[in-house]
Structure formats: structure tokens, C-alpha cells
Length: 134
Image 1 (cartoon, rainbow, N blue to C red):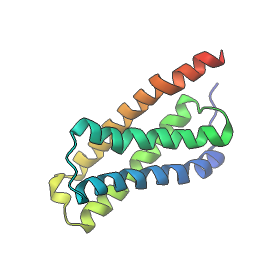
Image 2: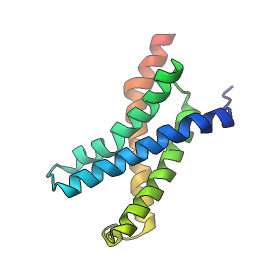
Image 3: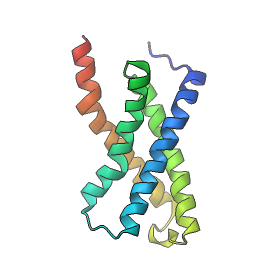
């Protein structure tokens, strides 16, 4: 049975998730500021996959165990929420929100990219750790 202890989960996850969200925003801002020409696949990897790996890696190094799937999904949902708020604020302040189109477009892009990043994380790191532990 999978049990998530909410108080402990929130306290440990908020800072790691906030760090990952700020890292994602700063990667996008750096790419835009310095006008770096990279393809979209590389930009998505830098923007989402890196922070998701860092977010789950911080937990692993603090607790010496991997999270179960439910805890990782809850942390990813928290990451999506924080990244959406930070992106919305950043795009509204710089008056470039018109490039996205609507809040729904922004939310769906963040959601899809985070889920794909979580799948890649699960297949490359979490699953081999589970197999190795048995």
C-alpha cells in the first residue's frame, strides 16, 4: 500500500520544486537574452528534463531512497503549478505573453513536457533502481 505523508512531503518538496521552477525559467531567459540558437528538442531537454532530474535527485541524496511513483507524480504536479505561475508572471511582466496565446496553451505545454520528462526519468533512473534493489 502506498502512503504519502503530506506534511513531510510538502516541507521537503516545496523548496526543491521552487528551485527547479526557477531553474527552468532562468534557462529560458538565458536562451532568449543571449539569443542562443538551439533546436527545440535541446531547449525542451534543458528546460524540463534537467530540473525534473535535479528535483528528484535532491530527494534521493537527502533521504538515500527513491520516491515511489505517487510521490513523484504529486511533486511533478506541484512543479507544473509553480512553473505555470512563474512563467505567467515572467511573461506578463515582460509583456511577451502574446507569444504563447493563452494560459491554456502555456499550461498544456508545461503539463505535456513535464509528463514526458517524468517518463524519461522513470525509464532511465527510477526503474533501474527498483530492479537493482530487488
